[in-house]
Figure 1 (spheres, rainbow, N blue to C red):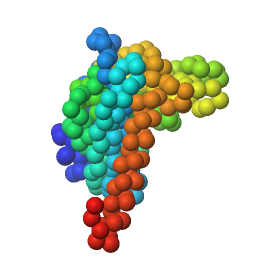
Figure 2: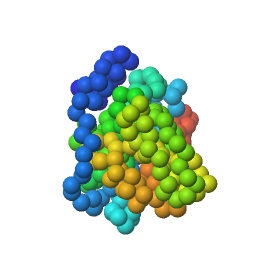
Figure 3: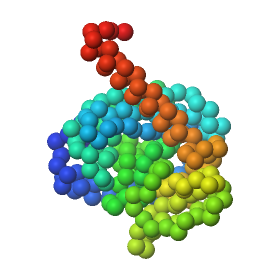
Amino acid sequence: MKPADYESLTAAQAIAYQQELRLQVKIETLDKPIRIIAGADISFNKFEETVYAGIVLFKYPQMEVIGHASAVSSTKFPYISGLLAFREVPALLDAWNKLEIKPDLMVLDGQGIAHERRLGIATHFGLITDVPTIGSAKSRLRGKYEEPANELFAQSRMYDRDEVIGIALRSKKNCNPIFISPGHRVSMAQSVEIIKNCIRGYRIPEPTRQAHILVNQIRVEHKDKSQLSIFGITL
């Protein structure tokens, strides 16, 4: 199934497709060097059809920005917890296709396998592009954990029954932890170490932090242009 077909899916069909994709997920050691890493973020209002996506490329491990791409698209797929990838992936794929250089690994603002069906946005996107991915989320979707100690890089395993599905990581003292889970083609341990290497004094790792800034800029610019067009003004 192509992301362009997501528009026609019912919620039940989307869940069934997630179950199919789940069988293809590979949580394994990434055995090639990471020279270029990317951060991705998506923004939308759950009551609107417009979706904004942004990807920022960095040299790794220097974390020097070397490029970016963005996309604005629309979707009619409803806002349903656990199925947000069906709203987000088509826009993110548009941005991906605009990149002149493809990264060795992507960090997405969202879940990897720390998801009811082990198919958060990072896992979903990793599968359709066959790129190694990590999910770095600001909030927990699935899994129980003990609060990490209030010290930099303290961590706690996240469990769904007896399965470890992610790590709660204290990325900054006196801040809530972030929630790391592998998406596809990278191990749990590697996911945590890569995210730790991407922390630059903020709670959020630099790839997704910069992608968030980019997406907000695109969103503001798009809304400004839309307002101008109402009055017949073109830029």
